[in-house]
Image (tube, rainbow, N blue to C red):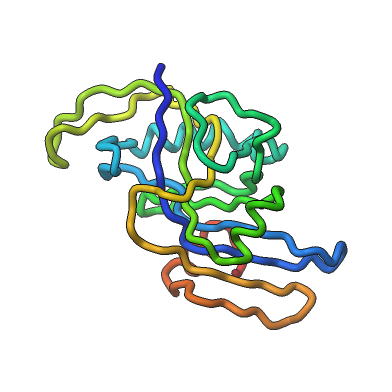
Length: 197
């Protein structure tokens, strides 16, 4: 098995004030990965492979045990001192997008989000790849069954050029302020997680 790393920019940030504690809680929401299309690392994650990997980590997500770090370490091992966020939702959309949500627990990550710094996510996992032969092109590799997601990290310079949208939610107020999120993204989010953003 080899370490597989892949980068995506976040669709949006969410800043929610919890009425109980009064302190802001920062969330990142967006597309964490995509299936059945070549990524910038010339890898293709077949839908069946990613669905299996997501299914296997659901118990970790429920226990708040799927985490990530700021920057991308060169090992699949998670350094407890480096944990910056907890993955709170991860699922597959009908179009093959892996939609996720992460709660920031590190003050440095919260500061970056407050200042609206462009951030991306990087999946970190173990798996095998084989040469791809199909209609998507040459020079590609396909991730094989048995792929294991170990962490999803926050990175500054993912290999894409788009910028995330930002969202701010106030639960203490009945109004929501949504800046820059697309109608399509909100529909996908609401369909998958059965709650409005």
